[in-house]
Image (cartoon, rainbow, N blue to C red; front, side, top):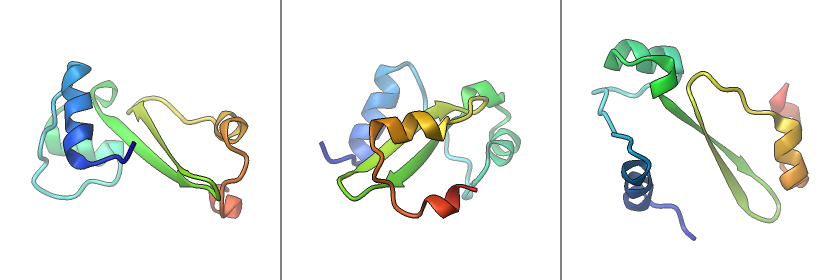
Length: 85
């Protein structure tokens, strides 16, 4: 399934979430918290990994960390692992 802005917004609504326009780009959870007045747990962050086979989109709440070992178990063909360090 191709991920589009529309179907991502639909998924967020189905999960009971709401998209808040911060009025400017935010790159970190800390910036999102300051821009929206939300708590870190209320923020979602997305990480996109590009592999030889397919892209993998990981979405977690603002307080969670992504375990790269678990991601590589899913698909061990990620490009540029040197960027992970």
